[in-house]
Length: 110
Image 1: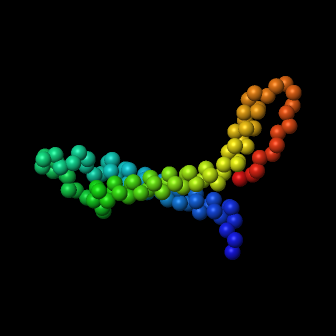
Image 2: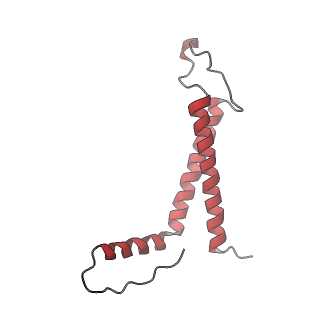
Image 3: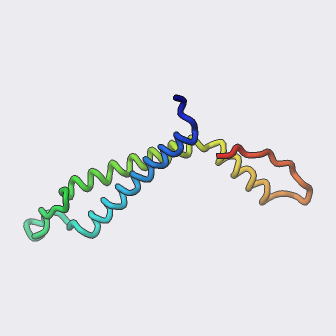
């Protein structure tokens, strides 16, 4: 079975969306639930507190989510590069068009 471009875009968008959810959840847990500031010579009584995972595991999950999301967005830009260039070119032509009509080539639909 041949993987069509629409299926590839759906798969890639799902990966980016999942990575975003991982980033958001881990970011909120690190920000609101788990303490920060380290051991502080024993003056941080909540230092060893966990929420399902340790703070270090949440940080690792957050880092990997960021890497996956960044790679997905870069791949998404690469896959849509022709469309992006075409749209920017058309917008540029419309912004600086003279009074005469300029023939504009059709952009590929994405």
